[in-house]
Amino acid sequence: MDRFVSQFILRLDAKGRVSVPAPFRAVLVQDKSEGIFCCPAVGRPAIEAGGSALLTEIEQLIASYPPFSEERETIATALYGTSETLKMDGEGRVTLSDPMKDHAGIMDAVAFIGLGHKFQIWAPDRLGAQLSEATGAVRRLRKRLGAQGAAGQPHGAREK
Image (cartoon, rainbow, N blue to C red):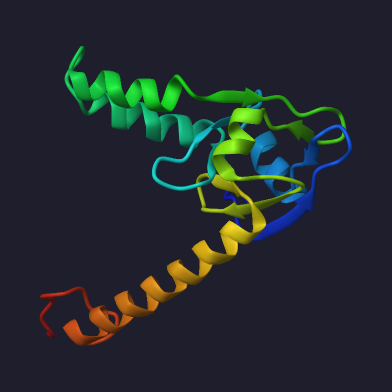
């Protein structure tokens, strides 16, 4: 599997370390990542995390703005300037910095949730609220898409 999927809730140990879920470690190893790239999620109390796919996504976003533009500088500052690369120890544990934990509201437990090409790290209670919100949004989207036409056909497609 080359995607981050599922969710895991793990406790921080006495030294503030948390084990990265084994399936996530496997994706990072396959990706040949030197560590876990992390940055505070924009507009959410979570940490964006991943390997080369996440870095590529950020690079493409930044490159979509003209060099030296205000927007490009702002996005690069927000995403790269606050980022960290977490190194896993021999047992697959990482230590989240205080600024990262503060941003996500993490105290003694960590929730990991896979988002395909990346994953996010949340405080478990905040992830629960986010999952409820996301599930509701998907239901509304499904109703809207269902009202647009026959299932399985793109909006505007014609039958032959």
